[in-house]
Length: 489
Image (cartoon, rainbow, N blue to C red; front, side):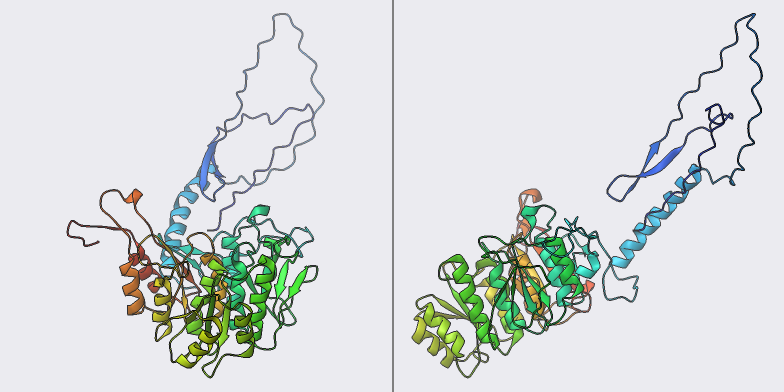
């Protein structure tokens, strides 16, 4: 909300004797001031008391007249009294608040792609990463930083995957102090959704390297500003690297980088798995194999990889690609979980995996929304989210925007640690997703402050998920009162 700025009162000229204006000062009035949080308050400015002149003692000679003073400078037109500005503020601030609320609920539309701007995080800003040069804090809307929220949801509302990735990274790593910054980032080309999903495994402890998007010859503004804000310094865990780069992704100058090679998506994913195993000096606990061809089916793997560090490998319906098979051979005996239905990954591929690893299980749904829900529910020992009860975080993205899976992955690796769920349209919740959210809806019997709560991150602008769907998500996620019969309201 724009803050009204009061005009500055011109000081009266000082006469030659050093005294102030000869006419008495007007009575003081309250003046607006900032409370430091953007709201307006008032501070009464009290004029210092002026002592009345003492009468001269009897017989005291009158001092000689002073030489005439220079004529005072012409005064400006008197400004409106401060009380008038206070009245203006009293009317303007409530009107501005009402307008903001109407905008949030879609009554006003500026015609832009982004939602209303919100406060950016206080940034320990730098210029080029590693230089220490200060730069202005990045604009919150450009970075997709959470710009508005309901009581149970927060939106990362960028209009592009690069903006959403920068926003989710800053939400997870506010970077106001060094301990809040990631040691490294992973730069992925904006046309490589498979590489982005596989790179999400570098987010898990101890590497903590969020995915940002770049290009072959230039770095998007959102990415460079997020890099400047987070200023990754590298660490022993990252092998000194400040950035990991995938083929086709450019890195700003001055960064210590480690490149991941590969001539195709399966090879790049295998290279990422080897890199993580080398950095953590050990094999993975599990391996996820998913489809090369159907991005909506593969998307939920990004959130799990960010949480667990389990590598994500790819296969086609005709058989295991050689890079995937070689990686499974390298980690023979590590349990493998296949994410996707038989229509995307047929039984013949499971047989190939079984011959190599010996331990294979499938998690699937016939379409992206159901597939994501089944993965969120799944549990097998230490593998799987096992989210079948209230009290969890969730991330919801559009099934036709696969890059947003990796962009939002930091939100699944910290905070409320939520699985990725998918919606297949902008306007309304799919029935299957509504049913699942109702199934895990939180409730209380006596004391709501001792209950479990759900929180949902909504990824993308209103072209991806509009405010009506966000409002429905908020309503379902709301803590409800459990009646004696067991119903929740």
